[in-house]
Length: 233
View 1 (cartoon, rainbow, N blue to C red):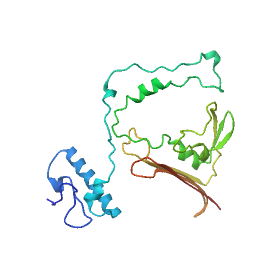
View 2: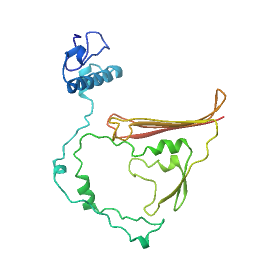
View 3: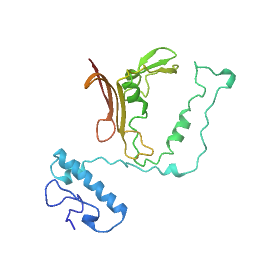
View 4: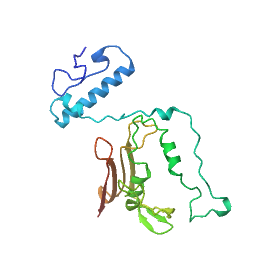
C-alpha cells in the first residue's frame, strides 16, 4: 500500500498524491471518489503554490452553501397566461412572464445542491465562431454582441424585442469546425468552459480563423468571461 495523508492524499514525495485501492485497499466506489476529490483539491493547491496544502484547502469555496428544505414540499405548478392563437404574431410574446410571487415560488423548488449554471447556452460559442447574425424585430446583431449580456442583465434585448432569425454565413470549403466543452456532470450541467472554432486553411497555413472561448473566471463560478479571437490572412 502507498502511505498517504488521510486528509490531503499526499505521499512523502512532494508533488505526488495517491488514493483509491492503491492507498486504502479494497473499499467502496464512494470512498474512492472521495479520495480523488481530496487529492484533486490538494494538487490544485500545490500547483498554485498556496503554501501548505491544508491552507489551500481551507480557502477553497464550497459549492453546497445551503439547503433549502422548502423545496421538498408539494406546490402547485405555475401557469403562464397566454395569448389566444388568433392574437399571436412574431411581434409579441405568446406567453407572458410570471409575476414576482410565482417567480419566488418556482425559485424555492431549488434545493441548492451545488449545480453550476455558468452560461445557459451551448449555441453562444458556436454562433460566435461561425460569425452568425442575430435578427430581431428591431435590429441585426453580431453573435458576439448578442451574447454579451454582462453580469447584471441576462440579455441585450429590449423588453419588447424578439429574435426572429439567425443567419449563418456559408463557410469556405476549406473551413474546419470544432466544439468542445467541460462540465461537472455530463448529463445536465451547462459548460464551465467551452470553445468553438471555425478555421479556414490554405494548404498547411491558417488563412482565417474565428475562435470563441467562454469560461468562468474564478473558483466561485461567479464571473463569466469570454475570449474572442479573429485572424484575417
